[in-house]
Length: 73
Image 1 (cartoon, rainbow, N blue to C red):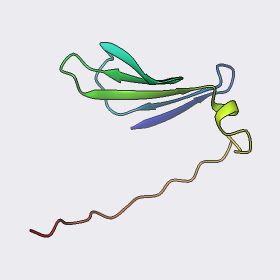
Image 2 (image 1 turned 180 degrees about the vertical axis):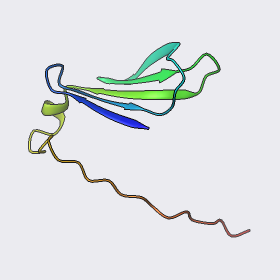
Image 3 (image 1 turned 135 degrees about the vertical axis):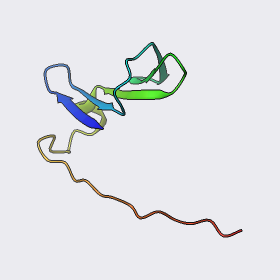
Image 4 (image 1 turned 90 degrees about the vertical axis):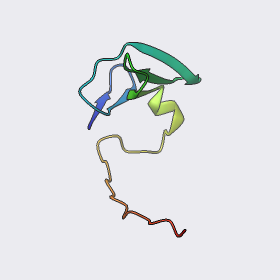
């Protein structure tokens, strides 16, 4: 998984694997989901990042790992 910030394009892109994007869909204004040939999500792009969160310092990222929650049957 890789997170890329393009300040010039004002965009954030999250790559979810090594597969190439075959098809893209804008699921919400400025939110584009990329799919592989077999329909799996391989990337997510967020455009107009500074307009979406003008108070956010784009030079700092906080990463958090969440523990797995086991379902009770």
